[in-house]
Image 1 (cartoon, one colour):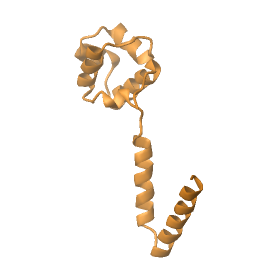
Image 2 (image 1 turned 120 degrees about the horizontal axis):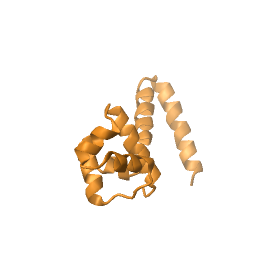
Image 3 (image 1 turned 60 degrees about the vertical axis):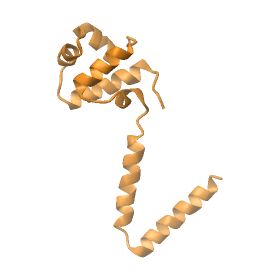
Length: 109
């Protein structure tokens, strides 16, 4: 699902930039933007053209999906973690866990 909230996009850019150990000035320079413009983008106070999004993504070595879509990675990560935990269970524990999940899913119908 696409994200249309400029503050969410700005926060994602901030998180990614910090994880990569870059400053706003470095991203701005690599994107061909002024420091002020890039800072405003991270604050969520500026709407970007598609070209600007692509230049920022190139500077950060990311895809536009990483900032323009909902972050479902956390759900996938949680699912993977649960599968790992389930695989470490005994056969009886696995059966119980799967039965509980089946009952819960049935209750949603």
